[in-house]
Image (cartoon, rainbow, N blue to C red; front, side, top):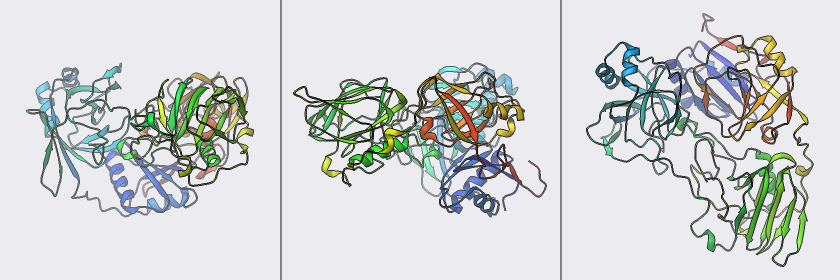
Length: 560
């Protein structure tokens, strides 16, 4: 029996389970993996919580709450835990400062860091970044007061109770004590992440440039690889220029990306689902041209796209409202409607005007886009740097053969063109589900969330929309949470009280409290800077009423 758990609504299809400490969280994660509960699609462990994503057509939050509370747990760890030994050059810029903070000498810090046994508790921040918990209680190190703008790849660092190794160069506030040449993330390796939850990690003084990986029940194997930043995946097949069906980008507009429905299922390696920001728009475009709904298409932010077509085919544009023009090789101009399939011929130029309502338009071609994939998806994740890079002028994108599409072209114009998307200066209503941390805010703060108008600012992208309101959200509790899972559509609230609405490329975990989640993330993806939002709430799946989330506590002692 797993006791002392709290259950919080995180969205209509996410349940956040809170544990009393990190050890209990790791035990719960293993128990949930072993139980494989009906309807559970993904688990995202963190410092004190496990975020459970479920299919609401197969289960519900109350059913999962009862099932999780009834899980049997032996308390023993698997004898087949993966083991990794990392060679470290202990020459980090913050080693002396860490020694002072821990009242040790630098040599003692190094010795105790190597003597400790570390285990990957969870992943996040970047693909391959693991949060390693150790068995030496001396290691409780505050983050730097001023984060670095760039931490080098391979940096070994401390923060709080964790050790981490940076798999790529990135900003960071952890204390640097050394560096390693180990390859933390490699798409050609199975699994790509060296650190996955449950992995046992030992650090040793570097004598040679190597990392040893072993199964507990198998002989050790040694490999030596020089770490390098994760390379972008190419946008098209090598023979794209010679393809009978392709499009060449004359003008990409503000941002043009290849997107499909994303790569769910890799949260344990620190990889978010990403995928099309407005999933329904991409699915509609694919249906119109006869593709599978999951086929890759082009996601345009702001419009302004111009493409040169090679080969005859069928295209459709959905999502944000914009003019659609096809100019033939002989100069004839044809105008088309949003949400309808139309023919394109060899030598045509397809032009998408600037978006008038909404921000993201989707272009699908019959046969789909043939792009290299990362973890089974051609989705561009702008935060993690996975998948195809931004499409630049002159890029030729290979298209699949139109006859390879599995369905007939849909001749009926979809309702996509009639979607009520807002323009800047207009106000739209978005329903939200409160939680998981609405109890971190005062009743006045909740009233402010639901009572005032919020404006989408220009500091917005696929990672999140920064919102501005006249009155900041008032918190009942100060400080930060231990890192916990976050969902697309979450309204995370930093100390300034102005919420950030998470988009598809959001970080998997974070330490600012999330007051609510937006129910219609497709609509949220279409909100341009200057659009104003009013949030409304409906009864939450595990809420007692419409304004507060039930933080159900299951414990004989009713304690944390």
